[in-house]
Image (cartoon, rainbow, N blue to C red; front, side, top):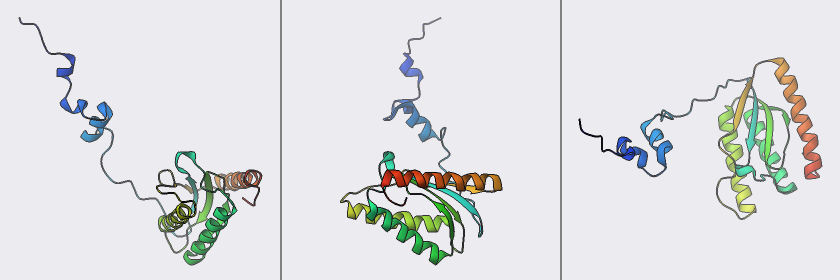
Length: 170
């Protein structure tokens, strides 16, 4: 019987040695992901959503009162146009939670308009470019009264904390 002269490198598939290493090879083969688009968010008129948006790399998305005022004006206008109710909000320096009840416009459309408009305005005002927000926003459908009550309390506590951090009405 002959001796196996293959090296350990020879026993690995060629794709493992592609740029990015083993993880890139698995992803390319579909092992780590399906390559399918993300699932649509659950939404319907009257649905309550706990939404959280974070700054990229935990950076500030509200640097001053002008940023906060611009964001709140945009939010107010979009809520009015879409007949969406906002039950709680807090503007922290690097993130914000919202409690929204879907109106005539889907939450995804509302959030796209809000976040895109604010990011463009923020980038122009602060002479920067690139993404402002980390990933897409997080949205949790509120289905239980106990969760809803705790969520409203939590957001209001965050808002009080923001007042201390921002020196303004968070």
